[in-house]
Image (cartoon, rainbow, N blue to C red; front, side, top):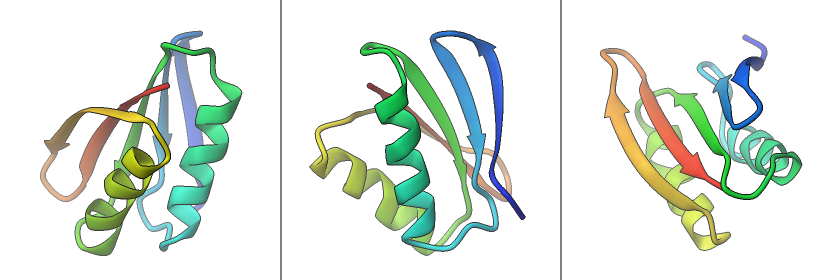
Length: 82
């Protein structure tokens, strides 16, 4: 499955990274965050297991703020602030 972006406005973006293996999901998330305006919110959809265990911690180590992690029955939505 390829990553797709759905933009609702300039400050809120969703990325569907379900089916994307580690560390590719982290790399794509970080690249997208680097393109966004400071203070913007990115919602990333991740699979259970390694993706949800690794990506939020890796983003925190890079200096990004995790605002929420929601279990959406089959995948997780991680909200990250630039």
